[in-house]
Image (cartoon, helix red, strand yellow):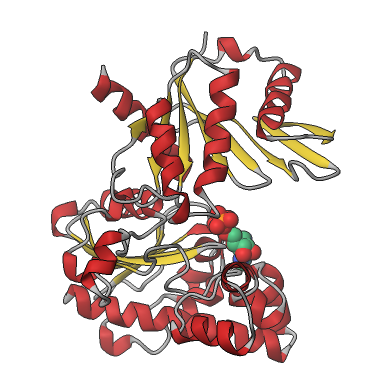
Length: 400
Ligand code: ADP
């Protein structure tokens, strides 16, 4: 029997990512992704070591997707019962005001996550599909919900509060919650460890730049600002989300374009950001178009970088003293050009990138600033799955 492992699930509306992790060592035993659930030509890609196993066909729902994934575990020669799974850790996007610790799932917790649907209509219901599917398939293994908002629960009031009618905000739990918290927490801890610094004395700005994107300012291990708000729509320009806009745009779209709330929601969440500006939300493809001189892609890229720099500037002032600026997630870890452009001309702020370090291709944590840069700039790979696995174990131990 394998040593204790955690199965980590991240359920999206038509997809489901999973990873079987050994939480102490961080070893990924197997991983996979189910895509196009409910559509024709659904796929499961399962990876174990160097081997991949695939299924292509019909998958009606998340439960069937997991069943197919489990078949691929067997096809790869491993019985799930022999994998030593002690917990299933679930990424749940919105914890609302109530959930800010990893929470062992029972019927009551499911009902309460369901009640947060208004706050996260695009995310929480689909996260629950993953929880419900695995509870059917592995009824004896406890599930733990790990919330994307949790790390930001204790944001200072002045950062968490919107300047809107106080009673209305209180009645509807309207505040800035922040998202990608698992990543910001993990990456900031890794940064301190990598630098051999006392986390209590380290001030850092973490830039999580993936398809979704967010920034945070972290003072001595505690977040003091973050760019996402009530929902993951606020802040940086993202793959398909607008990030910050004048809220007046929403009313204007209602009045001038006759759009209803769901249409506006879809425009701002799915048809905006890089995609809205140039039709492309994959950063690699976008960069190729920028390099070929495409004007729409170039404007999209420039808007993206401009917003990012605005946040870096704001957070440097929020922190007062910045020790480290950290790039992470798909774009942050891989796109040297974004890091160059985001940090360009900031020598007077103590930021000096080393071009060779920045351009070197590596999957490892690394410093990309010069040795005499006052602010250390780093690339630190995120690992939300491992963080979820570890938090799941901690939650179960706390309950025992
Ligand atoms: P998410 O988890 O939010 O879906 P990721 O963190 O995986 O997103 O990041 C996805 C983004 O990273 C995509 O836009 C992708 O194009 C971009 N990306 C991945 N590799 C590279 C690369 N080598 N250069 C530029 N962008 C990259």
